[in-house]
Image (cartoon, rainbow, N blue to C red; front, top):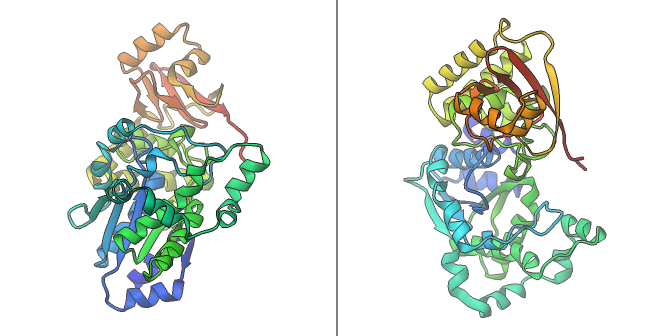
Length: 385
């Protein structure tokens, strides 16, 4: 196996099912159809999505067909994977609004021109109830309900809707519709991905291989990256903002970020220098080399040793705190004064100017207020089980 294939199969990979079968398929010279499904449950993609998109691009670079499925139908249901409660349902209008910038964001990582982009409403809306009932025969209730997240919810007395039980089958049928040879997903998707193999078997198709990647924690260093937790780094964020958020991640996360989002290995030097290289590399990847270099220079200028005192005042705030609330906790007298400072460009978060009063803060963020005052956010975040 070539170095490129080894890198594809091992770097930033949690598990492969069936590893030997996929290795033979990749070495055969056959062009594989590699599926990645993303439900547009929010308008922004983040670095957690980028880990998967990066792996999809690696398959593309080796000559395979990237098949990106935008789950416009399944997004109206909500994937129950890893959830302790039912997701709030989205309307078709919300889904369409969320989809508007998806391909532009995906195109930062995947070659859209050579990819096959599909919406799963193409088949799920057309096939109707008879097809759904036929699909439901492919698996038993006991097989679906034994998944760990469902068991956890039942033990907690939380409801599970019938449509959530059907969700894995609908995702599995996507693999049938596009004849997937490989499906990619996070480790929280393993049940759904295996369901794809079962549904393909029922429809007399060869079973897809599965490649899972680890979930990356967000800027709070505790929970998986998610917009709902306010700990995400968006792939379309401005270079300075992206750089600042990357500089704010806990040191313990650097090895995972290097492994899943770059081709580099972390050096054994100063953690700050390692993080500077990591942040510049990721910004350069998603924007440009010039943007990465500029963001690094600006961050160093703002947060040089001359700028940052040895001891920084800590400001304790609750989970999901807005920039205005954080400013009030930091000593700003009123929200109106905070808005005025934001409009003047006098507030920086992790080196990036903040002007949006709806901006959220996370544990570890450093706020510079005006020319002299600097505080570090100390968040009282939800307990992670």
